Every structure is written in C-alpha cells, then in structure tokens.
Length: 230
Image 1 (tube, rainbow, N blue to C red):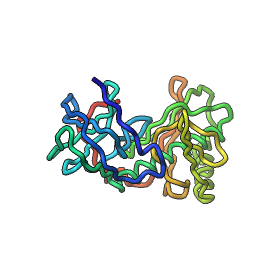
Image 2 (cartoon, rainbow, N blue to C red):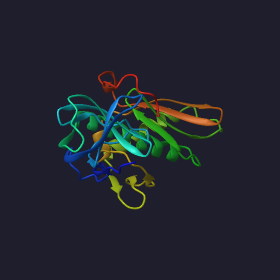
Image 3 (cartoon, rainbow, N blue to C red):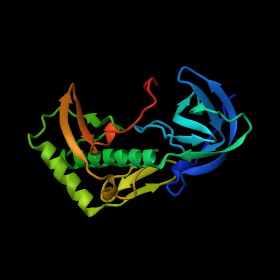
Image 4 (cartoon, helix red, strand yellow):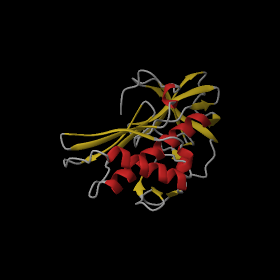
C-alpha cells in the first residue's frame, strides 16, 4: 500500500520546519526510512540532492522517491509509526543546495543566450559535480566560456529576481528569461548565488556539457556515502 506525502517545500514561503506524522517505516538497500504525511524536506531529483536535517531525535540523511513513495532515510533514534514529530531541514544545507540549483538555471540561460538555437535539457546541481547539458553538434566559439562568464557576472551584478510559480506545472523563471519546469529550491535573486564560475564547455557525441562551480563550498559538504545514483 503506497502512502502520499504532501510536499510543503514546493511553496517558496514554507518554513524549514513542520509538524508531521509517521505513516510507515521500512528498510531497503539504501537504509532505514520513514514515510511522512507531509514534509518540508526537498526530495532528491531534478538534479538536486535531498535535504538533510532532523526528524524528531533521528538524523535525516537523505530524501528519495521509491515505489511511488517519498522515503526519508534516517539514522539514530527513529520515531515509531503513528508518532507526531517535527521535520527540521538543515538551513545551511538548504542554502547551499538552493544556490547551486539556481546557478545551474543561470548557466542554462547564459548558454541559450550565447548559442542561438541551443536549449538546455538536463542538469545536475551537486556541489561535487555540477553541469548543464543539451543536444548540440555545431562547433562552439573559442571565447564561449569567457562570454558565458560575462553574462553570468552581469546577471549577478543586476541581482535579477528569481520567480517560482505554482500551478499544474511548477516553474522557475529568472527575470528576462524563459520559465522552466522545476521542482527544486532556489534563492530569491541571482545575487544570492555568490561566486559562479564556468569551468569548461565541451561537445561530445552531439551533446554539449558545461561544468560550473560556486566557489569552494563543495570541499565542505558531507554526503550519505554508499547511496546508489538515481
């Protein structure tokens, strides 16, 4: 029997803590998990990692979808099924994830502006491995990386707002650029991203891949080691 979890974090005005009830619990190849009736913790997907934090007295290690369920992986003292507890998201982890996610959208906008006809189709915003890709087989200009960096620096200086709209399809839009379907978390404006550096842009087998970093924070992040990739 599958249980539905209300995803409160989709509303940008939601807090980083909420009261919830434990609907179910289990164990899979990832670890011990809890199923909640609602959550403020971002579910891993769309190129963004699952949130970290606390559920009651247990440590929240990751949040993933599996078998149509939202599974909150925990360690430590785990609440029992039926218990009412609080879900608390680690604010620093969320801030970092939001910065890197919005940075990926900005790089995608820069690519689409500087390469007429290009459309970004996939991205990953992990602080250890961040990139944007799209189909493209035409040779790129030698100064493309520099042009992308100028575009990004100008957008950061202008502190363009980032607007999230709820609806049948949730979208994220950087002012002046096309809205993009997205279920992730974001900063309110481009200036909050902080340093964003385009590392390189390469084309291989008809796919363009642009890699980026947002300063050296990726050295400090701690991951749930051993989790299989989605």
